[in-house]
Structures are given as structure tokens and as C-alpha cells.
Length: 376
Ligand SMILES: Cc1cc2nc3c(=O)[nH]c(=O)nc-3n(C[C@H](O)[C@H](O)[C@H](O)COP(=O)(O)OP(=O)(O)OC[C@H]3O[C@@H](n4cnc5c(N)ncnc54)[C@H](O)[C@@H]3O)c2cc1C
Image 1 (cartoon, rainbow, N blue to C red):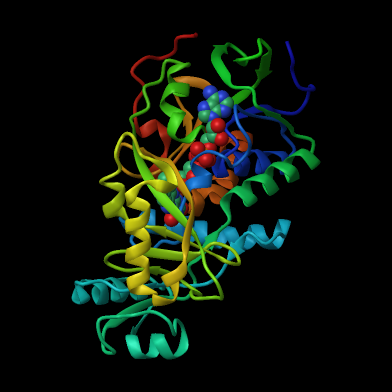
Image 2 (tube, rainbow, N blue to C red):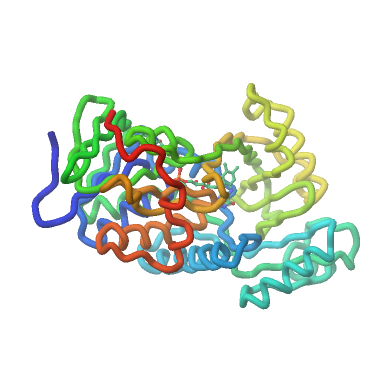
């Protein structure tokens, strides 16, 4: 059986998506002995199928909004700390059919000191998105200059590399099959038969978090919803911002590519989704072409089908379970916005016991465990 050295805390993190890699990196920065385990490549789970819009735009209530604002700031802080080209500070544009509702959202956000303004479509065309079609030149468009998108798989890989430089071990391609909670810590059983001993374990397995929670007898109420992103190849630079509109959401996805998404298409995803040839991909492209005529010759190059992990009340589920000593959860929707912040806040909780007021309303303990503990 493997175990870490004495005198430091040994923490096993299961899952190397944006959330787990953030937790592992921050723990390794703070001096913990970290082992990060993933059955697949870092960042290849839901993290690779995300629209990855970093925002607090429509996050309610106020305490969840504040958590997401702190998540946005954490990305800038992390970029200054570790470098890399994963954060794209493009800003975001929204136009909605219910113009009054959009204006009142902007008013509320401004009253909460969030950068937001309403512009007429003519100004948006003149200064921000020359190629976008709006119903008319007076259409009110909301502009959120501090929102951004992230290359989330690249960030996950960067965090894992940084954690490894700090001394963490990354075990890739080796699933956790069982967790045994013992008096002085936990023992993880891996697919290849190895056992890992640690003082604490973090469940950061995204859409599979409920089945990993079951390994310690914990019933984690988690909803899992499918989502579709379509990547298209384009010529030139037909788009500069994230854009959310009534029929299509678009954002740049690196030079020569744009990513397409819409909730109304996610709601119709069939069980036998046909990949890039599926008619829903063509539908998303058509919708995008009506917003950006320059996409006339764009081609679908990839369909990304992912599963959103959404704790039952829609908010993050982070922290210790008082009934299961040594077991922590880091499971959330909006995980791209929140991953780096959750990494810092959870790391502090694990190493010092201190719970930051920002995360206090979103603790795992608010969903009680049905069983105190049973080993697998
Ligand atoms: C269509 C779509 C759009 C989205 N848009 C946004 C957005 O605009 N902004 C935003 O902030 N969020 C968005 N999200 C949500 C966001 O992508 C997720 O919250 C986030 O990626 C979750 O990251 P994670 O690290 O928790 O999970 P994952 O990335 O899925 O990582 C979990 C990892 O755990 C591993 N694993 C699972 N079980 C085991 C096991 N037993 N042993 C070892 N390893 C295991 C998996 O292999 C995986 O690598 C979107 C999601 C979808 C699907």
C-alpha cells in the first residue's frame, strides 16, 4: 500500500477536471502531499465540453452571485500567478426578446457594482461586432466588458503540471473503484489493484460524483443534464465577443474557430445523438449564420457532447461532510467559473479547518448523508 511522508497532510483528489486540478494545485502550493487520480486525461471530462463562459451574469441569489464574482477575479489572480494563454477577456454581449427584462437585469447588476451597460445595436455594430445582425439599429444590447471565456482543458493541464512541479503525483488512466474510511484517514482502491492511503479524499468527479460518493455511503443529490457544443471552422475573424441571443450563443474558440450552443437545442438532444453529422449540429450552424452572415461557408468540425453536474438545488456543493471524517466534496455547475476559487477555498478548509464566508452557504453538509458510513 502506498502512503505519503510523515508530518504533512496527505490528500487524494479524485478527478482532474477544472475543479479537481484546481484543488490539487492549490493544496500542493500550500504544502500538502497530493495524489491526483483520474481514470482519463486531465480536462477531458465535462471540462472539455463546456461553453466555459466565466461570469456572474444571472447567478442568484445574491450570495451565489458574490461567489461567482469572486470566481471571476480568481481567474485573473491565477493567470498572474501561473501564466499561460487560457483566459480570454473578450467581454460578452446579450440581446433578449424581453428587452425590459434585460434592462432591469443590467440595472440590478450595476447596483451590485458589476460592470454592465446597455448599448443600441448601432453602437455595437460600430464599435464591437461589425458583422452581427440585430432586429434593428435601436435594439437594446447588454454589454458585460469583464466577462470572459476560458480554454478549460488547457487550464486543467496547466494546473496539473504546476501541481506536479510542486511535488504532487498525478495518476492518470487509473480509476478509483472503492474508498474505505478508516479511523485515521482513507484508503482508495484503484482499478489496477493498487491501494492509496491518505488523510483526506476530495471527490471532484463532476457528473460521476454521486457514484463516487456512494463508495463512502453518501447519497449526493446530483442532477446530470446533457449539453451540446458545436465547433465550426471559419475564415477571418467574424466574431470578437461571447454573444448570447434568443436563438444562438456563440463565442470565439481560438484562431479560425467559433463555438455554438443553445439551451433550446440541449433540451431536444436525443439519446442516440449522431455526432457531428447529427441534424442538430446543422441547425445550430444555421442559427449562427442568421446572427453572423460571415459564417455562410463555415463548416462543422466537431460536436462535443457533455454532461452537466448540477447539485439538487442548482448551487455548488463544497466542503467536508461532518458524518464522514476525511471525506470532502467539490461538485458544481458553473465549474469553469468557480473551479479555481473552489480550489483555494477548499484547500484552506482541508488544511486549516477554516471555512470562508463566501462558500459557507454552499457546503456539502447542507445535503445530509443518509448513512453515516459504509465501506466498499
Ligand atoms: C454544454 C455545457 C455548457 C457549460 N457551460 C458553462 C459555462 O459557460 N460556464 C461555466 O462556468 N460552466 C459551464 N458548464 C459547466 C462546467 O463545464 C462544469 O461545471 C465543469 O466542467 C465541471 O468540472 P469538473 O472538474 O467538476 O468535472 P469533469 O471535467 O467532468 O472532471 C471530472 C473528472 O473525474 C474523473 N473521474 C470520474 N470518476 C472517476 C473515478 N471513479 N476515478 C477516477 N477519476 C474519475 C473523470 O474522468 C473526469 O476527468 C457547462 C457544461 C456543459 C455540459
